[in-house]
Image (cartoon, rainbow, N blue to C red; front, side):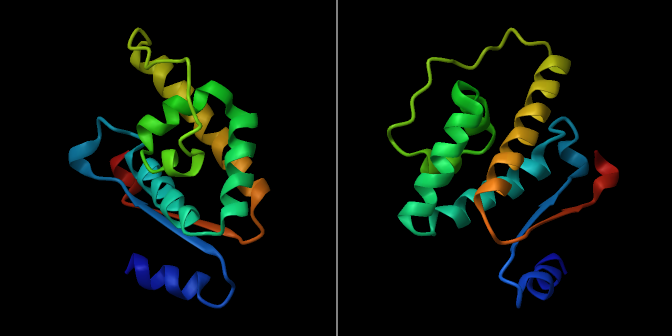
Length: 134
C-alpha cells in the first residue's frame, strides 16, 4: 500500500517519495522509521549525477560538519554521498545519556532535512506508517 501511494503521489510530478515504518518490537529505536527512510534517500541520491552528489555532500559538510559522523551511524548509506574524503575527528561518544542523545539526533535530522531540501528541486514526500508505535 505504501509503495502504491508513493507511485501515485510522485509518479507524474518527479518528486522523491520516502517511507518509513515504526515497529512495535523496535520501540527502543524511536528514530528507526525516519533513519530508514532517509537512508533510502541516500541510496536514491547516490544514483544521481556526480555534480548533484557533490553539491549535496558539500552542503551537508558545511551545514553539519563533524556532526555528520553521528548521522552516518544512523544512516550507513550517507557515507556513499559524503565520499571517501569524508573524515571526522569526532568518534561516537557513548557518554551521552539517552535523552541527550535523542535530542541531539533529533536536531541533526532537522538540520539534515533542511540542507537536503535546499539542494533539490523535486518535492520530498515523507510517509511514516504505524506511528502509534513511537
